Amino acid sequence: MTDITANSEGNSNSSEALVEHQQPTPEFLQRKIYFLVDQLRSYHSELPENLQTRISYDLLTELANCVLNEGIFVIVKALMELQHETERHLIKMRMQVENEYEIEVAEWRSKIKDPEELHHILGLMKIKHTKKLLESDKKIIEILDQKVNDQQSTLQKAGVPGFYVTENPKEIKIQMFLLDFILRLSRLKYEPNK
Image (cartoon, rainbow, N blue to C red; front, side):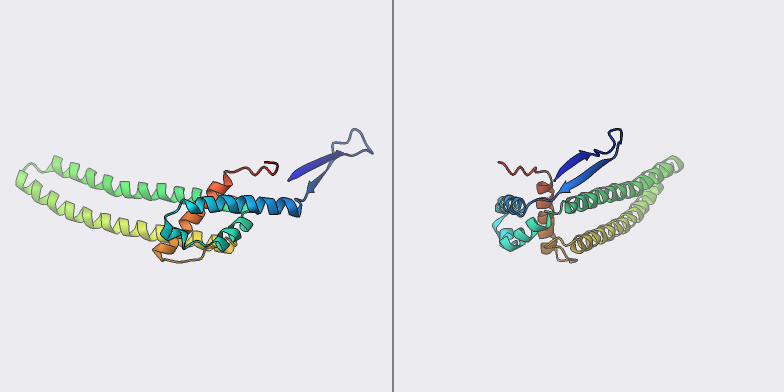
């Protein structure tokens, strides 16, 4: 969009300015949609054939229309940042479980001098640690699954085609490719004169 600024003529010292936003013409929007659809078809052609059949050209056209509102790019980028932050937190959480085990092993090694007793205690600790790690991993998976559901719901509410809450891994994979398409489009600069 183009901003047009005009100074107030009544008072030359006035710092007030009238800012008017020029609306894009229907022709401009149509050319931009064609550009976006062409880009999406190019991305689509890079997918494995079994996935290409799951993403229709109608869906690509709907997606192109949806991203005319560049606010969708902001939403997707914010969701990505939130996901990355969540992943960093979960990695720290898992590392904490690992570190606690290593500290406990070091403490037992310094306390117990009998090799047989130490071997027995470390064996029991390994079982305990494995159980604790599995519980931690299960919790991490539950958190990540919930994060995926939250993202799907947010994108569905934002009107992004192809997004709805599902636990079907094939559908989630399609949604991941659609997200990739949106992110790739967000990095493009549409120049109508080219």
